[in-house]
Image (tube, rainbow, N blue to C red):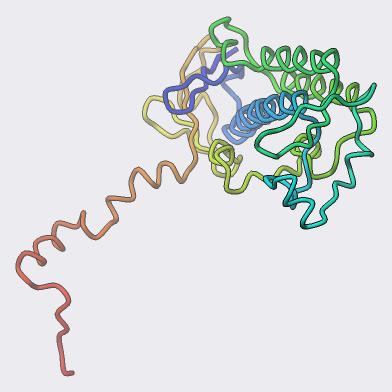
Length: 258
C-alpha cells in the first residue's frame, strides 16, 4: 500500500493508505470525505461539551438576549419542556446566552465528556505520530459514538435548531463562521505533491511510479487558495507597463475625436 501523509499548509491532518493505480478523482473524493468528516467530529465534540454544560440551544430569536429582554418581547422556548435530559435538568446558566441552562446531571455530563474524548482520539491528528491511518469507517464510528451518547442523555431528542442535531442531519449552516473556511469541498480540492498539482484524470502511478511501498507527503488546498496566491500577478499594479505609463503620465488618456 502507498501511504499518504495528508497535510493542509504545514499542519499534519492524517495518514491514508491507497494504491498506485488509484484514479486521482477517487483519491480526492476519499481524502476530502475523511478531512471534512474529521472537521464534523471536531465541531460536534465542541458543541456536545456545551450541551453537557448548559443544555439545549435556545431558538435563534432568543440567543444572546437577557432575561429581561426575553420577558419584554414575550418570547418562549417551546422546546424547553420537550427536550429534557434524562433524569431531569440541573440549572447551569450559559453566560453567552446560546443554550437554555437546563443541563444534564453530572453523571450524564460525564457520559458526554467521556464519549467526546473517545471520538476525538479516533480521528485525532495524533494518529499520524502513532502511524495509524484514519479511514472513513473510523470517522463514521466516531460520529456513531457521539450520536449514541446524545441519545442516552436526551432520549426525547434535540430541537431542530440545535447545532448538534443539524450536524447529525447534515443540515449545518456554517456560513459566516471560521469553521466554513476550514471545509474543502470535493470540487474545489487540489492535491499537491513535490510542488506539482496531481491532476484529475490521471492515476497516482503517473506521478510516483509503480512502487506500492512508497510513502509521500501530500498537501490539500482549495482552488481559491492557489488563485489568491497568484492573483497579484493579474493585478494592474503588477503590470510593469502600467507602472511605466503612470510615471510618464500616460494613463487615462483617450485617443481620437471627442
